[in-house]
Structure formats: structure tokens, C-alpha cells
Length: 122
Image (cartoon, rainbow, N blue to C red; front, side):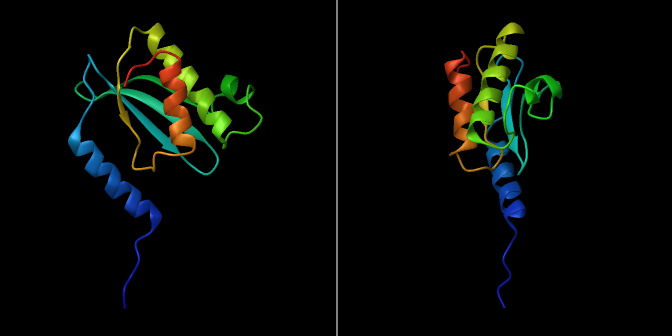
């Protein structure tokens, strides 16, 4: 009998393959994206030092009050704008995009496009 792996297991395996190819440095940190059924979050991470430089999530109070829903493409685009603005305020202009094993479409693509339009380069 063939057993089928869960979507979460497949996503984590894809993410580990992606993470083996690149990591974030102080000059070019990593923009990591995570989405759940209800929320979306993004972090800019320096993997060498092992710390998060900037983060934005739909669970934050000031972001949540700006959004009608927290789990749609519009919310993802707003998170992209917020993370880009916060990064530029900290002096971060270029990043490496880490889609977290998620397929590059819908919410993940909206977040990436909004971050690019707001001034981040990747």
C-alpha cells in the first residue's frame, strides 16, 4: 500500500532544499515568507548572526486594523509593502527571497511583487 505524505511534510522538505541553496548575510539578508490558513508573515533574517532584522505579520495589531481580512491576496500585498518600508528604514535594500516551500503564486507572489514595488531588490 502506498502511503501519501501530508502537504506540510512535502512543504518542509521543499523548504529545506531551497535553504541549502542560499542563506542570508548581513549585506544581503533573507526574506522568509510563511503563510497559514488565517495569517501571513514575513521576516528579513541575517543567517550568519542568526537574528531577525525586520518582521511584519497580519497578527500585529496596527496591521490587522488596516485589513478587512488577514488571509487574502490583498493582506499579503499589504504585508509586502510594510516589510519593504521597514527594511528600507533600517537601510536594507537587497534581499534573497525565500518562499518557504510554498508555491510561487497567489499570496506569496503578491507579497513578493508588493515588496519589489515598494523598493526592495531581489
